[in-house]
Image (cartoon, rainbow, N blue to C red; front, side, top):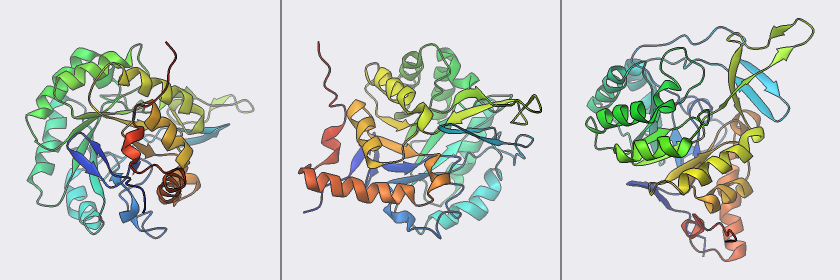
Length: 307
């Protein structure tokens, strides 16, 4: 008998704990030719804002030793085009649809959410992008201050009854404090971490490699940081955590779940191996079967720590 891979992220039920991260999977159309998206626990869409955004000036991506720097700047089609042109495509797949939203202000966050709520198409949850390091307005400001994070989350909680997942930045002194603030304000879960602020320089030209000078570091390089932040959050709040940061194998998924994550998001690895997330689901099920693990959810938060 195959292992039960189902997990719950608050009120959000997932067929397995493997999601694909916002900003690394487009709107799903780009990866559908490579595998059946229905195998995934969920798709987190590219960030949606009220109006379309062109994003930051190029170059926007620089490869690093164990990951990549990006500075996309939340380029997206805007909420109207998303509902009209992108969201219908995802309806055909038997996987959770989590729409990542952002705004320059609490009012803009509200406006995006209200417009999505008007759609009759299926949306299973929202991920609130409080943490993008690559935009001048908004971005990290929403999760760098617990009072601001609490206020914005409280406002958005009144707009929808769908699950709210607050995506947190690691670029703060105390991420647990921010997690507590959004939990108290009504968030159903947090996802952590977003990218770390970084920089790459071309020594020959003496110029930065990114058009915006600094950007967000992701990939295997940040996995140890992400694990530590998930552990820190797990000790601070009771709401579920979705782990993000350098996940590229089933072993990585197991590590995040043991530390305390209820689910994970695969990000940078999608650029390297387009069907990476699907492979991880299959490998995770195979591992659980081999090891006699009947329910993968039983692994959550089972880290053994000497006292």
